[in-house]
Length: 529
Image 1 (tube, one colour):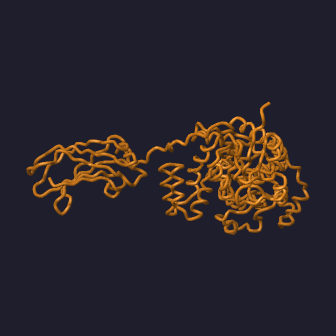
Image 2 (image 1 turned 180 degrees about the vertical axis):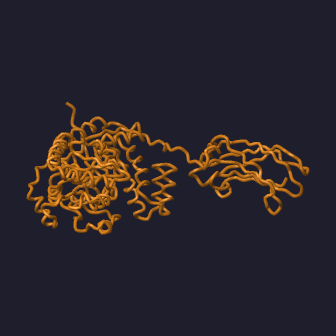
Image 3 (image 1 turned 90 degrees about the vertical axis):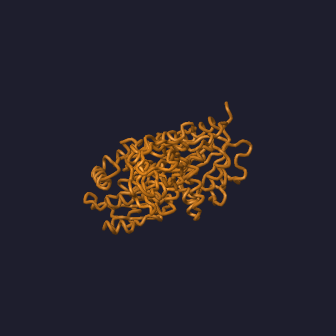
């Protein structure tokens, strides 16, 4: 029988306020029984007494010694800064709890007013698109779509021997970007707790001033805009939920002003924002609810530990019909579509569910069975150990140049190049006609689009001007017939009839819908004829 893998476990640990720290405490005993396990202390982070006593963490300077395989747990917040840095120095097996690490990148760069580091890293991750996006952020164009479109995880995942995620959706999404990556989907281990006594839920209601007979909805975990708390609050203002209360059990992100949203909705007496709760009070809050909410958009590909704990305690849940949440069976979760009408759809789905307590009871039973079947910690540990055994000797993937198509004249604002005009030399007689050859060469990184592309396409404009540069005549535009890649040359034929008097010929490309190349650092040509 093969020797068990020798693992160095690297993750935030309690008392750090991180779901991954709590998850680690549940997972460690099961890994310990299946591997030669050692826990590594993250630099600068405390470790709770009971964890210290049981696992005796070693310093990070001993990471990977004697051929041990680092097992990293990476999330999308600053508690994982040391995890990231260690994983970049010592490749191992990475459990990627969040597919999108852009928020992590923002925190460690712009959070310290280091824009140059942000631009450099985003360019390394996403090529010219990352560089341009970083510049836009510099000037205040900051939003969720940018963060979720550019996940900023490429260098980290390709540095590892293998990557583990918690859903098939996340695995397939990673493979779309990195087809030769060694990535496996493994369960997120959540122990099945004892059912919480009804009295604990009733006591929670009394402490929070929630009537015993009021229908109660609950949203759990750290509250960010992507968890849609504002949607939940606005749904509470709908007539279908006029008798219901909502508990938001978790600390709101600084970017959220839930009090303002509650005041605007006019339902201050029916929404209860608790802030951070310890584990026992968190369980009591779940037990107090009739129906739980786990909305999510956009998604960072994470499997929500808060959601699994809700299901494990036997509560039916409403989820967004999106990404990895669409993998949940219909018998344990009610799905709400995104987009226009999300508030109305949520209110309708919640009111129908609350009106059918027997159905919610059966869904809660199915939810516990689902967690027991799919997310038992021993099964998660088995899958992790199996992946470690398979991948321990694998070399990290080569970090190839970022495969991003070149920019085009739609998106790029610096268009260096050259223009040569042949056949204009020598004296011209007044009224003389000539056919000139115009050679246009692209010296920049952007693709110059053909004129048939419409906005962003390139045409060449020729004008005849007097000595004061007033336009005497404008020749018909010459369209670029095909896209012009970097280093390529296009040749145009230009027919010119020389007017009488002093004349200058000006030749300049233009971007359709924009302006001439002179304003874009591009070429233009002018000479007396």
